[in-house]
Image 1 (tube, rainbow, N blue to C red):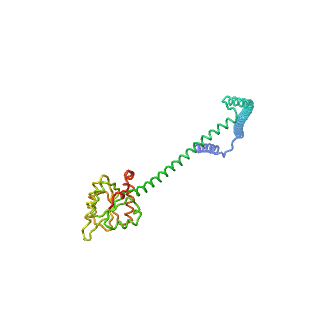
Image 2: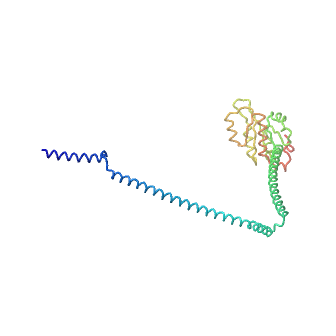
Image 3: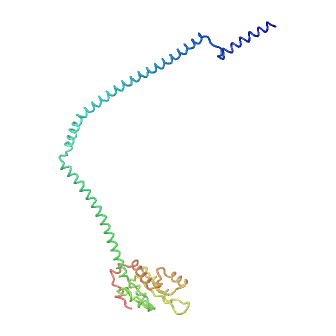
Length: 301
């Protein structure tokens, strides 16, 4: 029993010593501590030597780059001096070549250059002047054409042969207008016996017809259809202005339109004059007025 206890005590003592050594609580021997310090110092020295080698390498690289920069600068300065030297003889040579070239191209003097410029400017000015004159001439020609057309229309209105089929009131009204000054305005009264002769022998441009409404209710002009039928027999289209201040029913309008297409109604004196003026511009026969005297000089009612 005592031997077993002694053996267990020994084991416990060994275990305690190992535990203290591992945990650092048990003091190390001086030799072991000194060896550890030597190793740390050696490691630091090696690290410093490595850093020193790196610094030496950087210093060598810097010296190399510095030398390369110095050599490059010398090269640039040398090339620049060479370039300036080349320019010093290139400019006189270039001036000489340009002078010889100008002489070769026969630029004899500044006077010749001025003459050439003056000629070009003159040609340009002539072209612009011609263009401006052409525009003005075109505008003037258009204005003259418009004036001629206005004069022609006035002449057409003045010379158009107008036949007035009057029942007694139109003549007194037209005599107070500028139409009364016309020589080629002729009047005819119902029953319009001269109408076939006038249409056959004369050139009638426009017919003014006064609508004759009877006093009897629901009765209408008994002569208008006969007159329109006679106008249809004419060689050329003759427009007729039907003056009717009364209101006509649709039935009467249809009766007239079925008989003759070239008609226009006027229910006031103003519309009558306006329609006659407009129609004279369209249906006037210039050839007739050149070859025939006015109708009023040959036909008397």
